[in-house]
Image (tube, rainbow, N blue to C red; front, side, top):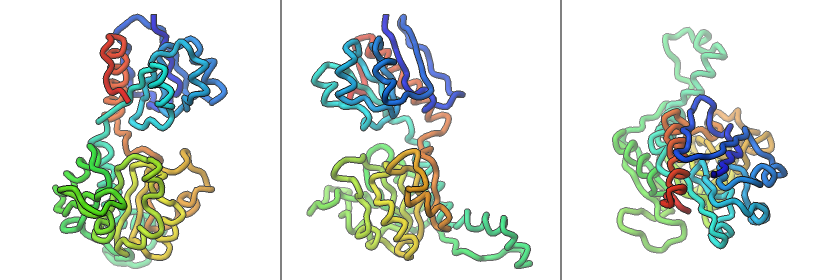
Amino acid sequence: METIVFLDRATIPAHIQIPHPDFEHLWQEYPATKPEQVIERLQQASIAISNKVILDAATLRQLPKLKMIAISATGTNNVDLDYCHQNKITVCNIRGYATDSVPEHVIAMMFALRRNLMGYHNDIKAGVWQQEKQFCFFTHPIGDINGSTLGVIGSGSLGQAVAKLGRALGMQVLFAERKGKNSCRDGYTSFEDVLEQADVLTLHCPLTAETTNLIGKEELQRMKPSGLLINTGRGGLVDEQALVDALKDGEIGGAGTDVFTQEPADKTNPLLANVHLPNLLLTPHVAWGSDSAIQTLANQLIDNINKFAEGKPQNIV
C-alpha cells in the first residue's frame, strides 16, 4: 500500500476538493511543513506531494522509501531534479491548468493601470469628487487598449493565451526573441525592439540563471514613458529596486506585479515598501488561482499519482 504525504495542503484553498486516488493508500496531509519537519513526515512516504516545500538532495538521501514526488504546481525549483533522475525518483508537475486564469489576471491588471482605476477609487475614497462638485472629474489620465502594442516575453501556453486575448482587444502582439540573440526566429521580434515598441510588456518565461533580472535598469529605460510592465511569471525576472526607481522617475507608466523575489514578501521588499505609488498594482501570487483553475490543478495532481501507480507516469520533469 502506498503512503501519500501532502506537505503543504494549505497551498490549495480549503474549499477546493482534492479527489481520492484510485488505489489503496494511506493519505496524510499537513497545512504546512517547516524544513526541519520534512524528513520525519516523509520517513514512511512512498509518494510526496509538495507545492513549495524544498526537497533537496540532502533531504532526499534520507528518504529511501520515496518513489515519487508530485509537485502541485508548475514550477520545479523546490525539487532537486538531478538527484531524482539519478536515483529513479519520478517527479511530475502540473501543466496547462491556468491558461484562462493567468491571462485574465494580466488583462485585468492592464486595464486597471491604463485606466487608473485604483487612482479614481482612492480619489472618491478621499472625497475628491465631492470637492470638485462636478458630475465627473479627471485627476488621472485614462488610456485605451485598442490599437496599442502588447509585448510578450515567453511564448508558451500562457504567453500564447495572453496574446490571444490581446488580439481580441485590438492590440498588435509582438513576441520577443531571447535576450542577446543576434537573429530572430520566424514570428519573433528582437528583445530590444519589443522593449521599445510595447505599450504593455508581459512576462511569461521561466526563472533561470539566464532570465534572473531579465528586466533591469537598462531594459526599463528602453521602454516607453507610458509603457506598462506586468509580471505574473516569477519575481526574480525583474530587478525590483530598478522597477521602483523607474516608476518614481517616470521612466515607465506603471507596473502590475503578482510575483516577488521572496514570497511572502515583507516590507524589506522594494515593491511592498512603495505600495503607495499610484502607478503600482500588487497582488499576492494569485493570478493562477481562479477556483476553476485550482480545481483543474487538484484533479491533475491526483491523475498524475494514479498514472504513476498504473506504471504509466505522465507530466514527468
